[in-house]
Amino acid sequence: MEIKFRQAYLKELYETGTCSDKKHRFQPQIVSKYRKTVDLLEANATKEDLYRFHSLRFEALRGDKEGLFSVRVNDQYRLELSIEVIGQEPVITVCTIEELSNHYK
Image (tube, rainbow, N blue to C red; front, side, top):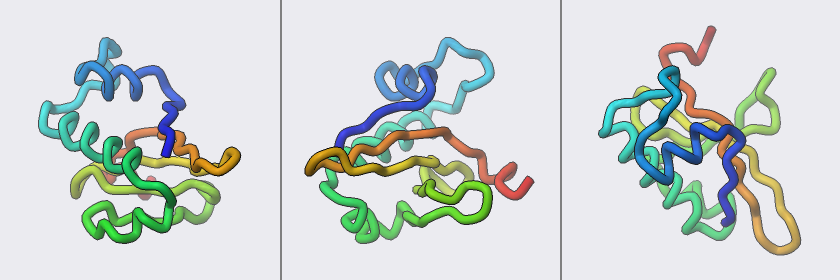
């Protein structure tokens, strides 16, 4: 799968492991798990393949986030993403890192 990042800080966090934006700073272990999760998304060919990884807890979102999917980085954080198929290859757009403590607000 091809990975795109909706926000610049997500790309910077993935590529460098740090973020110049003070609002989006995370602990090093969270950044490491985030990078591993994005690598895992990129290594799989279809969204059906993501269901095999139970630790990701891949799921379709409902309500006002209809059309988005989520995977878990750890118990506290998740990635929200959209998936579209362009030609033969699925393209994942990482939308945001969502903190689960704010998930239901």
